[in-house]
Image (cartoon, rainbow, N blue to C red; front, top):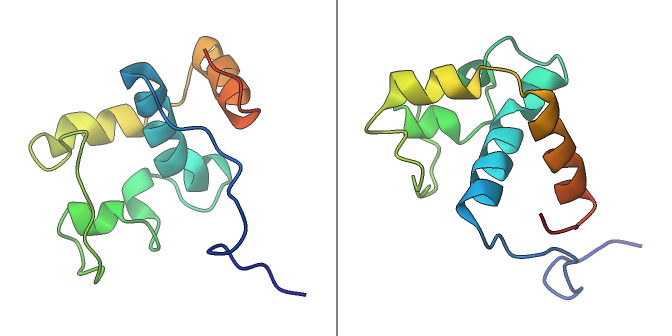
Length: 100
């Protein structure tokens, strides 16, 4: 049996705050680093981040709501900094679909 994402309902909550958005943004881009797949967020070859940085043509439009293109050094420094314990707790709530 296969799962069709277009036919089945997705069980997710919309991001409704700027803080939640920042945490989700960092979580997504840091996930390969946390998993030990690369040393820095910009090194993961399958990330849309590489396209935003102009390192490669990813063939799909990516919206840069966090301003990475305008401040890549600052943004990469932030993304490459591990989360603190408070943020880790918020991520666990987010993954459990609990608002914060």
